[in-house]
Length: 333
Ligand code: XMP
Image (cartoon, rainbow, N blue to C red):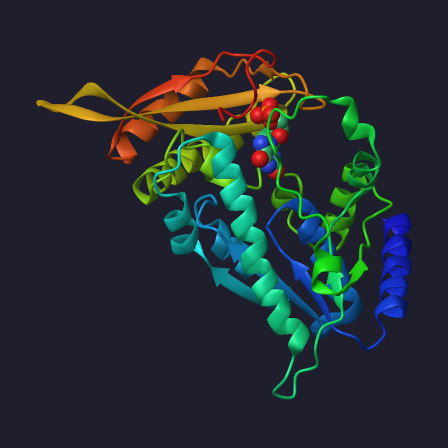
């Protein structure tokens, strides 16, 4: 649409003017905001942008490859993928407290990103050093950091916002989405050629599967959870509600699978199994402060349950979480 085209042209001109012939670094997470920021900045300055994608090993099935296919493969943007999964899993070994896990994941994330950014800032070998750090800050983030957040007296869960990074790195800040609301960011993303499935995805927490594996995080658990969660998401996208014609993915605000590190007994063929349990979580909410568990059709739950148990060896029981927020939270940790 024309208005969006004008908006893109204006934003592109503004970025070109601000950046000139300098180099820009952007932390790409695969989330909506950083993806749209990357696509927009790439449209404006092409190879003057280098994206840094830190893969902490707690992403969903094939998510890292999908980010690379999109940005490197389709958009031809420069992307440095840092596979830090062993590092993160090492730091998380033996840690089971949810907040301690969040602090480790958030802290390591910043450390790894800073190392990469410092290299790009230094330049060398004929490569010019970077002077800008781009962030996918959107308007609600701007308001939140302006004090509205202090209304909430108790921090129930610490989110890992990467605050103060540009100052610490000695880089200038580039925030092309600062004036936009989430819906506008999504529209912009689609207009820039990002796939709608990516732009209209449910939110995914920074610590990723780290807070969806209860207690200690282990690679074995993450691998099982990734496969189970992928089945749940596939079926949410497959099943449509007859009344609205919408998929259950679109009818829910957030849906995911949680790994429970407990074993229960099952039977398969003429053998007994003793395997792990997962919980499916799906909620409907407008602000994520309160949420109702979603009344998913039994046929969908049935399909997901039988697929997970038959396809993911190591999981023999699937449960559905019927807790609303409050008093439960959306995530289990
Ligand atoms: P809760 O579980 O508190 O979640 O009801 C509310 C929303 O926040 C997300 N969430 C997080 N996002 N880092 C994030 O970036 C976190 O540590 C974190 N914890 C929860 C959650 O997915 C939901 O959308």
